[in-house]
Each structure stands twice: as structure tokens, then as C-alpha cells.
Image 1 (tube, rainbow, N blue to C red):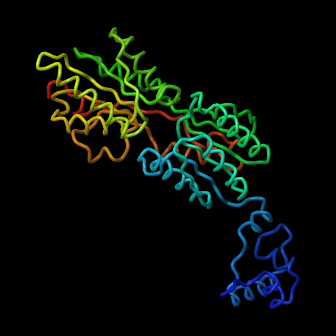
Image 2 (cartoon, helix red, strand yellow; image 1 turned 180 degrees about the vertical axis):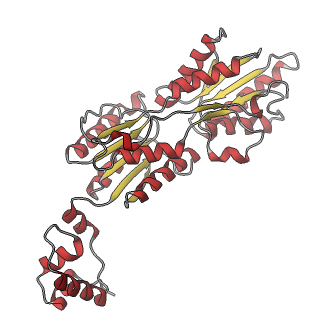
Image 3 (cartoon, rainbow, N blue to C red; image 1 turned 30 degrees about the vertical axis):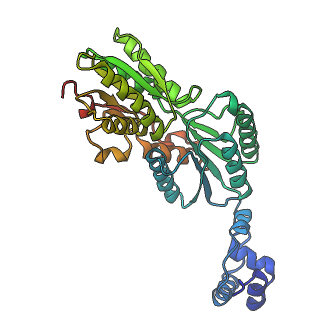
Length: 354
């Protein structure tokens, strides 16, 4: 069945299409109550569905928030998305979602698509990259974001600014103290332990991973311990599993006389992957090695042994980013919420000698 048109509604109500549009799509020039009632009754009888884009033009707001994440299946991004959704619901707005795999080129396409749909604001969650292969795509993403902000859009980026973005208005960064928290984790793990440290990190140039690596090494130095060995892999569970297999072979080759090994994976899903690899090779945590992650994703509630990690308020991060892009947030910054904090959380996976 063909959808009813605004012209048909206007004809049935006995008004002009412009008057019908002002009633149904919203306008500062509101017709009288009797006319408005006739228009709405006509729309109901015809089953007319208002055009969201026309409403956005009339109100100068579409009520849409664009959310860009690397992978919605990753519990880290799922928790942030839940926070974005909660804040959007408070503001009576709807969320559009794009997943990009962390590729700046895909993020640029998502920004352009959201801008074309007149999204009021865009939230971007996921590590920024300074890798050589991303330089051109970073520049194009930054240009697209700058164009969007110049046209009145609001952007919030979780973690670090988009490389090369220069917008001075409508651009917000929700800073996450990754380096400081990783330093605190290292200090906690080094206390009273005689072990060798290994860091499983993501690819070089990935800002979140590099921040956490740098912070962890600084924490070991502050504790008077040698720097940790660094093993780089993909910034996901598969990367953690691959690194875990290599470490398992080393542990087994060293035999019973080996020094205890304490592993820090720069996110929880990498720690889960590494633990699974060690278990597949017949090794147990924390008997044969200890391990810690970062983020405190919800999945850890069912993970054994309980994983030591750094707890981040992921849903709060999503809420804060969304509120930062709300109209008037620049004039009332305190309404968005306090700065992001986290906490070292030690559990059974790092209990030495367990």
C-alpha cells in the first residue's frame, strides 16, 4: 500500500500543504488549535507518517546521535554504547550505529553518512592511530569532522582527539587516564613480587595501547623493577591468544626452575585470549603464570580465574560523551559529569603461588 502524502492530508483537512507541514513537522509558526486538530485528524485517518527529515529541517534538529565504534560485539564498546543509549533516551533522541573495525577510512564514511542524515551529534569510541598506513585516511576523517562541526554538528571523541582535527567549536574529547592507571597497576603488581614482567600490547602507533604500555613501564621503573618485555599483537582476543601461545612455549621450555612470569595484557579481551592459549597448552593461571588486563568488561563476571584488571566506568564514559554533545553543553560543562577515573582491581589471576 502506497504511503499517504502531505498533500493528501492537506486536501482532506481543507488547508494548504504548508499549513499541514507546520502542524505535523513542527514550526515556530503554529496554526490555530482548530486547524491543527483538523490536520491531525486527517493524518490519523489516512495513516500518514511524518517525514523525519522534514521535521528536522523545521525544528533545526533531527533528534539523532551517530555512534561510531570499532566492534559492537566487543564488550568494551557494547558497554559504552549502552551508556550512549541511556543518555540519548534522557534527551529524547535516537542513536544510529556504525561499526568500522577501527579503520579511519570507514570512520570517515560513517561521519559523512551521519552528516547527510542531519545527525545533531556524533560520538566516536575507539583508539586513534598514528600508523603510517593511516596517515591519509586520518587526514580525510579530520577534514570530514571539521566540515561537520563548521555546519553546526557536535562531536565527542573518547580517549584522544582525532589526528589532524582542528575544529575549535562543537568538538569535545572525553579523556581516559590510561597511562596513569596502567602505572598504578604496575606498581600494585610489582609490590612484594619476585617475577619477570611481560606486556602483551597492540600494534605500535595505536594510542590507547601505547599509553597503557608506557604507563605500565613507568610504574615498574618507579617500583625499582626492570622494564617488562614487550610482545605486540593484534588489539583483540585473537591477538592475545597468539601471544599467549608463544608465551606458553617459553614457559614450558624453561621447566620447573623458571622464574615466575607476570603478564599484563593491555585490554581484557587480549588477557582472555592469552589465558585461553595458556590453558590450551596445559598451563594454569595463576599456578604457572599470573595475568592482568585492563577495562573490567562485563564478560569478566563469568571468567575464571577472576581476572585482575583496571576498572573503567565504561557506561559512564558513553553517557559523558553524549551529554557533552547536547545543545547548551558548552555553556553548562558541569552538567556533563565529572572527569573519568578508574581503579586497579586485583583478583585471583595475580595471586602469586596460588
